[in-house]
View (cartoon, rainbow, N blue to C red):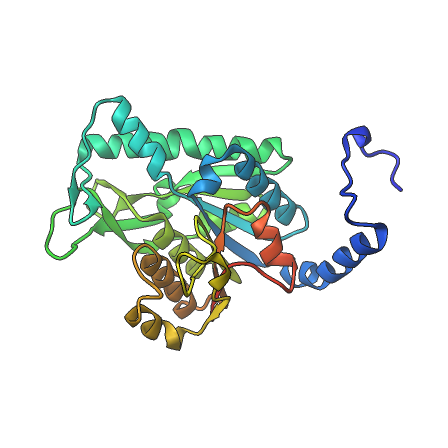
Length: 302
């Protein structure tokens, strides 16, 4: 036993696991450790895992652990609830067009302030407190993400953009120096366009995963994954072939907010990312369960 570990008095050992079981867990995880070391993993972070302080701590611990053993983690985050809260605080009424938020210049300023100014730095600070090396970026930094005004069925959504290109150079340099890049999804316009754009974080994360040649793309969500019956968490579909997705959409198994998440997984797969996952961010340490066990968690698109 190591004698120089600090705070040993605070260590809590789960009485349900004896030494043999603990060692079995570690041995089973070893092949996964070997596989993932040196590989790039892009994690889209949001939802309840971002709002609940205990879950947030679990996510930060997971990511620091992954980085510590040599896995190159990129964390891409959104912040819809926090943006809504700030708009309410300043008395700004939200306007929606066909179910999508209209983003005028004033709203875009608030989006930039919340995502790049507050949330991004909060996450970076938490990662550093947990022992990680983290650097905050936005899509504007080093021209990381460029976008153009989105055209959604001819409706004007203001400064809502769709990603046109990703320049991953700055992210790759940070990964090479063992930093954890934390990316907020505000994008700059294409050449000659001085606007900044509010872009979908799931889509941005998928595009970044493709640009980096990531080995894995994970979306942390508020549901267990794709369910055969939305009212029955035990009906989780653990693996879905891309060829079967249209069938699941047609029969209503994949519906509503799950559709764009599945589309992002397909985007990443078609771009060459071997493994794409939708996992439940409400489960403590769900990222570690997915990475280091044969049981996995959530739904994998393959």
